[in-house]
Amino acid sequence: MPKLKLFRAGLMLAQKTISTMLRKKNVLIALMMVMAAGAIYAYKEFNRTNTNIARESSAFTINATELIKEFTNNDSLASSKYVGKIISVQGLIKDIIKDERGYYTVTLGDTLGTSSIRCSIDSIYSGTAVSVKPGANVKVKGSCTGYNRDELLGLDIILNRCLIAGQN
Amino acid sequence: MLKFFLFFLLCAITSIAFGQTRFFTKTGNISFYSTTKVEDIEAHNRSVTCVLDTKTGNIQFSVLMKGFEFRKALMQEHFNENYVESDKYPKAEFKGQVVNNGNIDYARQGTYPVKVKGLLTIHGETREVEADGTITVSNGKVNTTSEFKVAIADYKISVPTLVSDKISKIITIKVACALEPLK
Image (cartoon, rainbow over all chains, first blue to last red; front, side):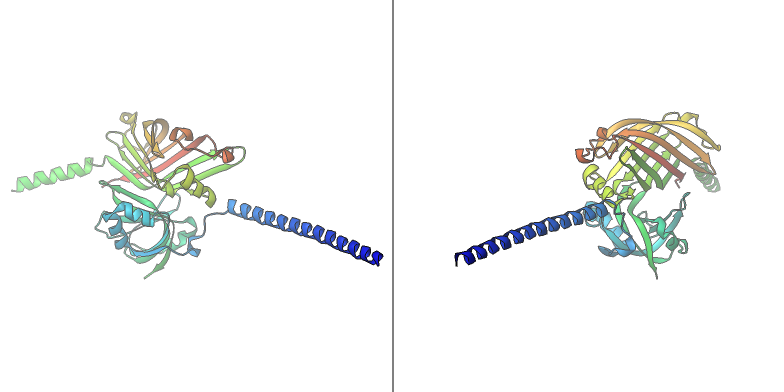
């Protein structure tokens, strides 16, 4: 009988040791997987390029005249609301400028006013700006980078990485 | 009555003809470059506002920091959130003088080397800066270009030690603005 007890004890000890070893191995594997996931995330995050604005959703959709009004009335409040966000602005094209490097800037707003929304069209979306004309009612989507207020040059709300999302 | 009208017309025409002393752009380009052994960083801004008074040589630039575009989004975020704190200091400005403005004949096509001196404000810090540049008069437009270096520490821009070898202490700034008459 004692032999059997001894044998069973020995078996239990062996079982315990093997399961501990396996658990340790599992922990090791799990740890390595977490580290690998972390490394992949870090690599992807480090190399992340600015997202394609077309794929992102706008934080606000607003009329050009409304946006200009908000900035005219309280520029710091409007700034904290819109700056750094992706917005969609619907309005009439005041002017289309093409610079020496072939980049387009579309200005929205009332032709008589000194205030405008200046939209720097992203180079990958230049095609959307080629066919539009001043006076067209368009929807522009872009990232709001701030505003400039000057007695000489008027009020400009600036957007970059823009694309012309639609024309009415 | 007619004399008065003609006199008025003459004044108006004269002022229009000789009133083109101010040139400006709202689509000027400013880029900056940081080169280190570890990494090269560059950023570009295409919405720079520049006004030049050709009579006095007074020149001003205004740049929205959030308008600088980087290839890597994380770098752009760090630039805005940590380095230049663009929520606190949304703009960088330069207010200065074209030192040898008297030597430039803005009515004649040509390329003139210039020296520009003035106050540069970045991250809320203002420093006196002197830079070499070029003014080119062509087809009624005035093109201004310049390349100069700044030490980021001068503008209290602090880079954490963890990434200090990735960002150069001296940054090269390149300016290229095509100015048109301000009507």
